[in-house]
Length: 227
View 1 (cartoon, one colour):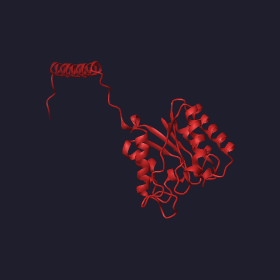
View 2 (cartoon, helix red, strand yellow; view 1 turned 90 degrees about the vertical axis):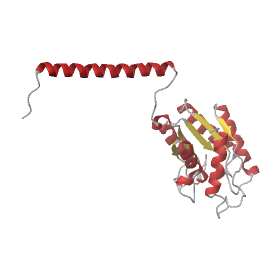
View 3 (cartoon, rainbow, N blue to C red; view 1 turned 120 degrees about the vertical axis):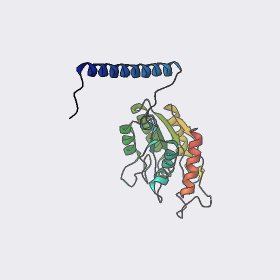
């Protein structure tokens, strides 16, 4: 059987341990003070520091015909560490109803609930044929609603991406959305048409981008956002 330690020895050991802990605490405090003096910030987890981005769009943004991870929003999120809510639905527009039976208003609801740092919202060729005044009103109402509900978020609009529609056909919708976004204090991204009419970048339906086409869009968006 082990002999019991004398009380005096135990007290001495406990005192030594407390002094060691105090010294360590003092070192930690000194290091923190030193870091503060040098302007160093305490480390934060990537989950809290990553930019939270919501995307409102149609089948181009959702990656129709590809795996969702191959759509351009997901490609940028992977490269730049975004926390992404890609809310895009094939067939949807500011007026046009998508495959879920809703126009962009349902995506706006989800974006507002998500409270992102950045909202990307694009014009859509799904709205072609809509009365121009009706479309302009819907765009302005949608953007104003986002701006009012997310005052601390950045809003960036972009032109409709299409494999088939011409620039002339898309011009009215693009112009209306651009004005609505700028009037709301947002940013306009003129992406051009990174994949339209380019061999290997368009799927067999002549409308949707292939993976290289999605990569081409991602590169332009990242450049416009200066990522």
